[in-house]
Image (tube, rainbow, N blue to C red; front, side, top):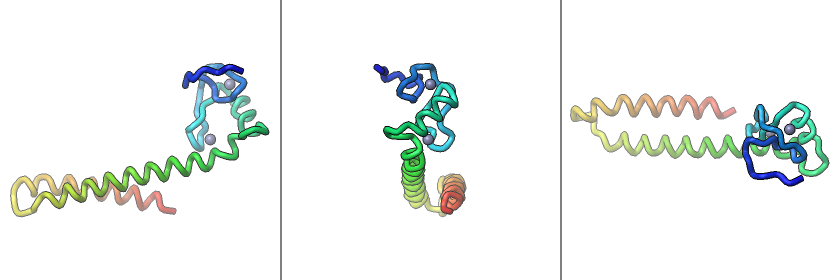
Length: 111
Ligand SMILES: [Zn+2]
Ligand SMILES: [Zn+2]
């Protein structure tokens, strides 16, 4: 089977139909039908069931790292503004509310 690198194609190796949905767990592979998803899940060679969970975890760890970096950037930014002047008093509440949203998100993610 000669598959092109077209992302709109079903990820089951023997199918070249257009994709209709993604794997609901990892969202990393896409299929045209539930039948193709099932075939790919149970195929003897590189079954998707073996990598699905780790793809998901890898993606979540990556996103978490990005969000933590973002939080660090906002913290640095916040430290640049003193609450002793007008600009600082205007900017700090916005930054603080973003940081607290990020914290809520990060806490939710830790299970
Ligand atoms: Zn297919
Ligand atoms: Zn998956």
